[in-house]
Each structure stands twice: as structure tokens, then as C-alpha cells.
Amino acid sequence: MQTHQRLQRRLGVFDATAIGLGSMLGAGVFVVFSPATALAGRLMIVSVLIAGAIAYCNAVASAQLAAKYPASGGTYVYGRKQLGEWPGFIAGWGFVTGKTASCAAMALTFGHYVAPDYATPLAVAAVAVLTAVNLMGITRTALLTRILLGIVLATLVFVAVAGLTGPHPDPGASAQSPGNAWGILPAAGLMFFAFAGYARIATLGEEVKDPSRTIPRAILAALAAAFVIYLGLAALLLWHLSPGRLADSLSPLLDAVALSGFSAGGPFVQAGAAAACLGALLALITGVGRTALAMARERDLPAALARVHGRHTVPVAAELSVAAAVMLLLATTDVLTVVGFSSFGVLIYYSVTNAAAFTLAERPGSAPRWLNAAGFAGCLILAFTLPLGSVAGMVAVLATGVGGRFLVLKFRKRPPGA
Image (cartoon, rainbow, N blue to C red; front, top):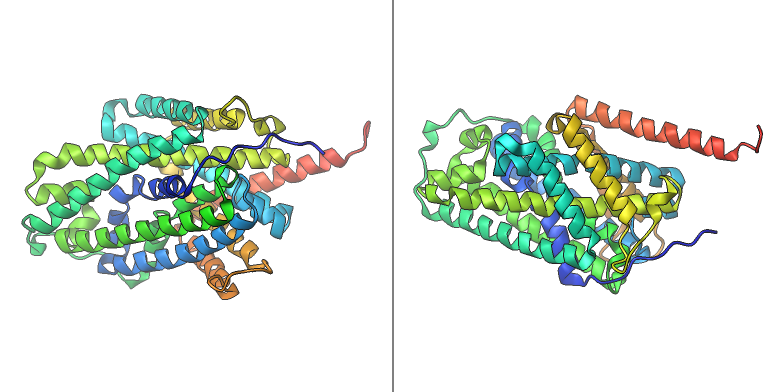
């Protein structure tokens, strides 16, 4: 049996929490409220609550499994251990493909915030720089994440103060209130991905100190902080901008500051948005690289990706391959029009997480089986209420991966010379 060099445990609770929260406060916090409000109107608050509840179920399941299997790969590993190779592969393949596209979209969003005319070159440069940071070791990744997270949190505090203290526009001047009750679930599907960043903590399980204690604490702390922030911002924006104006806004946090009379704060909000993009992109590249490493160890991806190099003990081959794939997407594809299918992939990923946690024999009193069942059902409901194009696109990607793995396994079992 082939042995692989292990990664080193360097992350404590604070660093792991920062990585998870940095992922959840990515570019989505600056844009997700508008499309969610367009679907659900004033009931967008209900969508946030639903998304947060399902995210809590998933977080509890992730924490249970990560404490038992503290290795890189997250649900890919958990699915293989608890459910079998195929469920694990589906989770891993959906995560790697969907989140690679998300990396490209995040990088491009950063480029548009900084200099729209040079968005793609800036996006490629951001991927290159952040990959270089990752290759310097997980502690450097955690340090940069803390810096970027600090900038984002300062920006959100500024937006909240401006919205609460500044003059409020006349609600009657905005467009008619959009959305309806039928849009609550699709809006919750959009909002859910604001909370999905704690998966990055689980995928780093092999690099966390005392994982049975650190990982559950970091996951739940990051989710709790993100939930409070998103719920507070949702209430503030609905009150300050009105549902009609919020639904029509391309940059709701920037508009909230401008309409409060703090127009000079616009560059500060833009800087915060750019930092959020970079923080989420940094965590995404790290998480996808670790999942690719785990899949390569099991030969579900090329074995060369399982190599760990250098004194920083990082998966160099996996990290560079992820960066190359993201740059290829940036150079050849209008990423923002195709990345929607990643939403479906992440919900399938978490449905496998809940199914795997359901099979655990030993569990704390705070993690009953019914919570895993509720998370599983919630993920599937949100997945299949997404737009049809998103569902069809990711189903095609998953089917391609399943077909490819089937053929590879069949070829491996063929006797020599057959």
C-alpha cells in the first residue's frame, strides 16, 4: 500500500475560524442581497433564516465527521469512509469542479472592482499571487486571511454605521416591491452559499491542531458570526434602501453608503469588496487543492497531485493544477455566466455530508440523527429549486465524472494483454 507524506498541524481555533469566516464573507456579502430580494422581496429575511438553519445542520454534520476523520479532503473522505467510494467521489468531484469555477468567478469579480477595463489580467494576477502565498505554507495563508478579514469587517461596520445614522431615502421613490413567497426557497438557495465557507475548515482537517476539539469549535464559531452578520445586513438593507431599490441595486452596500450621504466612503467600500474577493479566493484555492490532494491519494485524480513538497509541507502539484485550471477558465470562458452550476454541486456535497453523519454510531447529544436527516432533505430541496440551467449543467458535470471514473476502474481491472 502506498504511503503519502502528511501535512503538518499548524492551525489553532482562531486561524481555522478566520479561514472559515473569510470564506463566508466573500464577494457574496456585497452582492447576494440584491438577487435574493428580487426573488423574495421583504421575505428575504425568511430566506436568510432558512439558509442559516440548513447551514447549521450541515455544520454540525461536518463537525462530527471532521472530528472523527481529521484528514484533508472534507466530505470526499467522509463519504468514502461512511458510505462507500462512489458517494465520496460524487461529493469530491462536485466540490472540485464547482469550486474551481467559483474561484474563477471570484477572481474576475475582484478584477471588476479594482479596474473593470483590466479585469481578466488582474484576475489572473490575483490567482498567481494567492497561489504563491499558499505555497509558502498554511500559516502564511492564515495570516493573509486574517488581514483581509479585518479589512472586510471594518468595511461592514462602516456600512452599518452609515445606514443607521445617515438620512434614509423615501421608500416611495423606489420601484414596486419585488418578489413573493414562491421566491423564498430559490432565494434561500442563493443565500445558502454565503454560509458554505465552513467547508474550508473541514478540508484543512489534516493541518489543524487537536482536530477533535478545534474543528467543531471553529466551524460553529465561524457559522455563528456569519449568520449574525448576514441577518443584520439583510434587515438593515431592507429598511434603509427598501425592497424595490435593493432588488435593483448592482452594489447594495455601496448604494447604502451613498444614499446615507457618505459618498466619500465609496472607495473604502470598494476596497472592502476587493479584500472580500481575495479572502474568499484564497480560502477557495486552498480548499480545492486539499480536496484534489485527497482524491489523488485514492487515485480518483492523477496520483501526481498527491505529492507534498518542501519544508512548508504543502500539496504543490495540487495547488498549481488548481491555479492553472482557474487561469484557463479566466482566459477562455465568460465565467460569470457558467458558474451557477456550482451552487447545485455544493448542495449535493453537503447532502453527502449529512448522509455520512447520519451513519455515525457515536454522537454527542447536540448532534441527533434527525438533525442530519433535516440537513439532507434541506440540501436536496434547495438544490432542486435552483434554476433549471444550473441544475442541468452540474448534473452533466457529475455524470461526466462518474462515467470517467467507471471507465478508469474498468480499465484498471483488465488483465495485462487483454
